[in-house]
Image (cartoon, rainbow, N blue to C red; front, side):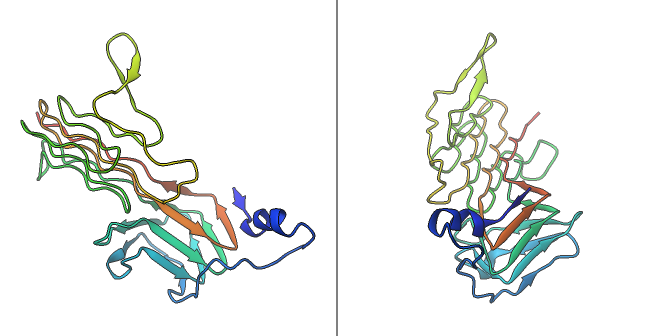
Amino acid sequence: MKIRIQLLVLAALLPLAARAQINTGSDGRDGAFNPTKDTVIDMTDHRDGIYQYTSVNIRAGVTVTFKPNANNTPVVWLVQGSCVINGTVYVSGQNAPSYSEPGVGLGGQGGPGGFRGGNGGPAGNSGQGPGGGAAGGSGEPAAFGTIPSRYNGNYYGPYTNGTSIYGNKYLVPLIGGSGGGGGTNLLGGGGGGGGAILVAAQSIELNGIKAADDGEGGVDQ
């Protein structure tokens, strides 16, 4: 799928202009981003989460992941030229540790801009974030634009245990997903909320995958 942002913007503002350059706000200070192998971007030195590239090219077979900064901001890519994604950009939340892994009972880390899941245990915690899932039982899932559903043995119905809708269709302000609630019976932690990424470029070609899923809850057996 190929999106030419310049044409979409100019169709509304300058209907008679054939072509023009759009100012994405990038000064190009981070240079060209063209990873040749799987890459983890450590956001520690970008406290605001904003990267100013000249161009972006993520080739097929390459996966880009992120280590969130201390402010847990979403990822923002401002690109002077084109952004081509044939590989994978991954901002998903982490799964909570299972019973066979170290740290069982802890909530999963959220993706950049997302929120951590609640810890499990007899006094389990709710997931962090404005739509965090409530603690209890096997843990409640988090909400974003809609209330999640559960199967009660007969039909699917909405959770009603303190989970709130937040966000809007414009994604302004940019914010990630909330964490799932920790379990008080199974004692597993809640999955981390999916992160968020914004890309502004002269043109965007998306043939790969942009993953911003929530993490899975852990299980203690």
